[in-house]
Length: 231
Image (cartoon, rainbow, N blue to C red; front, side, top):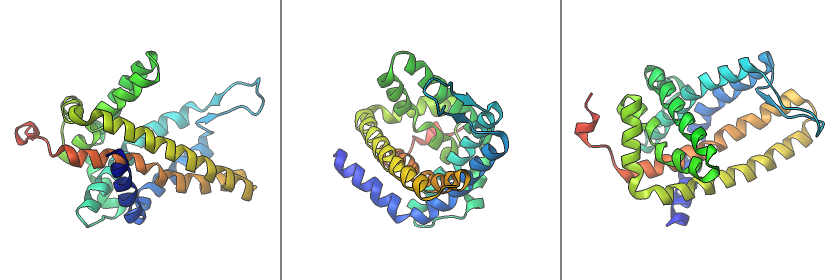
């Protein structure tokens, strides 16, 4: 079953690669521009004895941007599944409408995952898996953050382990391919800023594999009960 789900995810991602790139590339470009203007969000030291440096401004702005980017992707996934991929502005509109709720939802997820990290990797991954439907409930069903978190736990109950395994598989695939792309582009393009941009664009659409994986299991879980959708 895991292999079948993985093939479904790859097929959907490849079939709608153009529309997904359309909604991921602008945010990848914006992220790079922010780091050009305010410094790298996180910079690893060249010297093994050096320390990691970061730009607080870049980190804050990127964290504020991510919920909007993720909400835009979620809208495009739903539109593409309906056979009518939408434009960038049409996909951004629902995400902008629900932005405060999305921001709060991702903050809750981040806190849950961070607490999971205190007990090592697996609990953090499990928490992320159980909360992964919450942004979809916020964007597509307009739940408030707390209702979305509770409903996500309910909807992922029966398929939490297959979903967790697929998320791991997708992450490993993403890590392998993105590392190869980054190495090839860095070698071929000597200019650091140009190389960073050329790396960010394909990696941004590659990272949507994770969104597609969660969206596929979201579909399998079925829509929330109508009474739970009511405010």
